[in-house]
Length: 111
Image 1 (cartoon, rainbow, N blue to C red):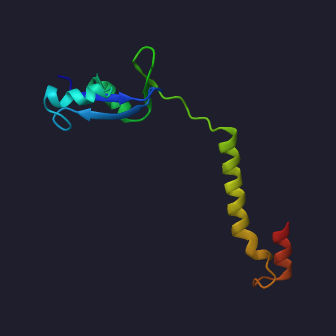
Image 2: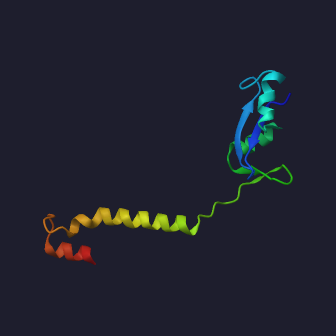
């Protein structure tokens, strides 16, 4: 019986792992996990997958470096809007006529 069993997503990312004598001890206890799609992996593979830096190649079944995440255009725009909103919230007070700064300082904030 292998020590580690892992379930992978369709993308090759590790979903979760189970360990002999932690999650199961007998073949009967292991079987429900196998029925859910868990597969045996070796110690070295477990070490790689546990770092979240590797995924399982869907064709070869081998660990491969996880691709760098590239944000979508919408995610980039959301981040830009969030930064804009943060800056507006942080500086709006300087434009209020009763905020305790001089007119000269207020003019500098307008720029």
